[in-house]
Image 1 (cartoon, rainbow, N blue to C red):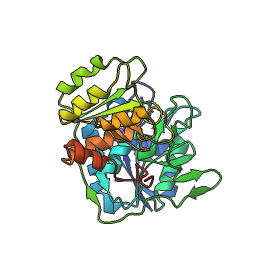
Image 2: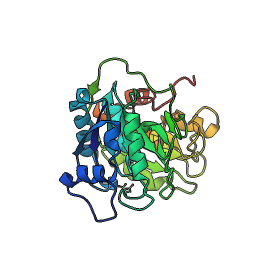
Image 3: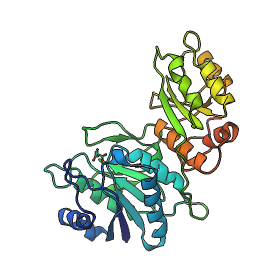
Image 4: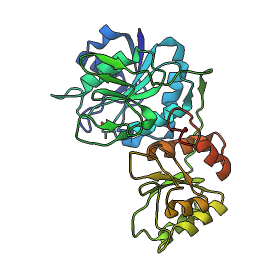
Length: 328
Ligand code: ASP
């Protein structure tokens, strides 16, 4: 098996970044077993704290995978944990009908540190990248998750990630178990690089004054993700957000409701508060994570879907397994 290590970043202690040409030898010195699992090529695309990732980094990674798609059986991307789920979501939308695994991994402790989790995460990722799992996934701890379903929920535990609304794609214990609910590649591969930054996210909380949000109408954003309560609720009586949502819709902007509750899905038909937001023009994001909804909107806007009606419709379609669409 050939695994293309498109290595984005190498976890090191703060302020000790390796030069790009040192990365491959550093990895293979610390984890020589990798070469027993696969024929590996290491490329350092960039090496920086993942909090500094921008749209053009996603595009560089996507292009790198697309250019080498036929040269390898799988790809592993080493990535800082902070923004890993955003990169995974972006790649899942950009690499349409992906025929091979692209697995992002990282660690909580640097590769050279005692008790590092980088070694095992990397070894397991490379092993899983030799399986037929045609998805952009995240491996961390003991599990492989669908990337666009994953959230980072710990900055201290080795099990730093979770997939609240979709089961793991594989589990590693004494044995490796690959489950069969991964995606199947249908149709020809396409690279869809264009991404728009015209998205804003706002977290609702009791006491939020709608007048603080008035500035949004004057921004060049085309979609606003409102992270609301429970099934997708905000105040609709005192300090109601209904006029704000209506105003944005009239200004040609879409408001998308996600939930601060990680498990479950947004349902704007169950309570009066949800119904009022929906009547004002807001659209629920179903069981998508807030992170996936933000990146999906950036992707869809990049593809030119920029009227609220079409954007709202496309948002609720399943592009890469990020949303469950059979709830009726
Ligand atoms: N701040 C780091 C990053 O996301 C944390 C880590 O290495 O996981 O790049």
